[in-house]
Image 1 (cartoon, helix red, strand yellow):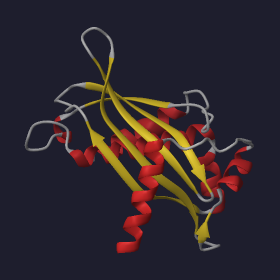
Image 2 (cartoon, rainbow, N blue to C red; image 1 turned 30 degrees about the horizontal axis):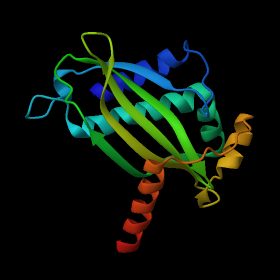
Image 3 (cartoon, rainbow, N blue to C red; image 1 turned 60 degrees about the vertical axis):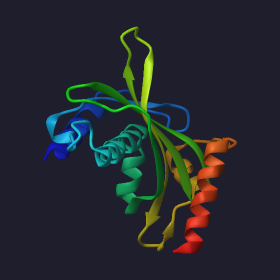
Length: 182
């Protein structure tokens, strides 16, 4: 139930937040660790990180206008791969910010980065976790993934693909290697 309340809050708040350019802007969502987010070690459950990251991606889709296109065309957002690096634990009642942004794309997929950030006593940011997620939009009618070019065209965006960083190249190479074993 707690996720549904967060989703409802996200949808309502998105109506009052500024529009996002999905290529250049960063979604920032504030959260707090609640008792239902904890695991048996009394810090945020590792599965909850992934669940909250869904909300970061949803925020970008809603505030960029992509959500309307998804509904209009019957597309389905799909996560095909993800990798996370935990750096610091998040404890009960601790506030944090989820930052979500698009870092690269090609053909029919987009690479997104999620960062969960807290603030140190001196005000400096502390990254608690970083994740890379490869996502795409599946067109059920065409039985294929939507090209990034079409997605951007539907949003009225013209952008050049950024050069992927070393971490993205390594992530994609690992993903390709895993495909060959399954």
